[in-house]
Length: 213
Length: 65
Image (tube, rainbow over all chains, first blue to last red; front, side, top):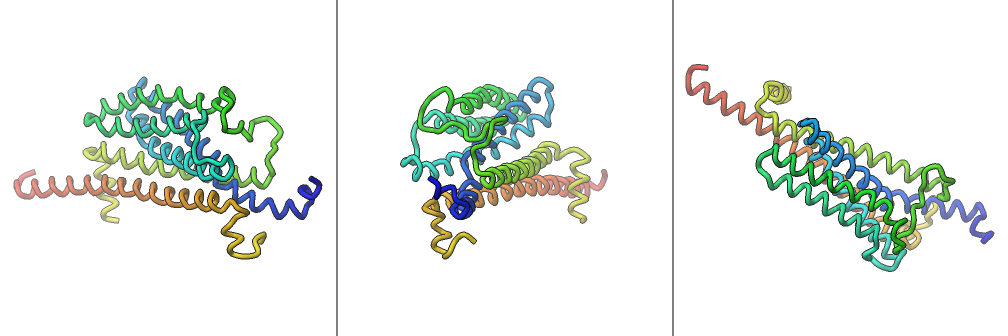
């Protein structure tokens, strides 16, 4: 045990752990889990306030949420193979995360299938609002059901058990992923606005200006 | 540097499959998604420009505004 904690071993182990954690499944799972409620929240705003921009943002968020859910499941599977000895188990956390993916995909399919924009927005919003119920289930799944997945390794307000280099690397990636998510969601939201408001004077002026420039 | 050879770097202490698999997928998806979003943005702008051009042509053919 002493050898493990000697400074020489620590420096040898730490960089590897840093690389290891940098693209950790937990990061993507967390992002996907937060984007879900955000999608549901803006959908609810659209529903109750009849705000068009809120519906647009709900639509813009869903593909990015699905992307991070896929990343969480896929990297988790790559990690689970050597660690748990299996690619996949019907464990509570994994299964609820898979349901989240299906909710994202279901939302996207539903919204795409209805031609009337307003009706599509409202139907999608309802699904998103109901789907948010799944998110606390995912979060507490490791507490409620004692299946294969370990408990959370990062808890607010508690002393951290994680090596500081790992923690820093993880926070850095979390930040980078958030910045990425914001950027791509805004681009998609802009595209949807242009698709819908193509007949307005400002949209035409914008396109005319960008074509001249 | 903590790695003494390229193969050691690729192996990542036995975790190479996870590390490179995760990075590879992350890079691939984070490249693909912004491209798709930009294409959609451009397609929307092109559609508006085409509609404007069509209306312009119709106006010219009609002779009067």
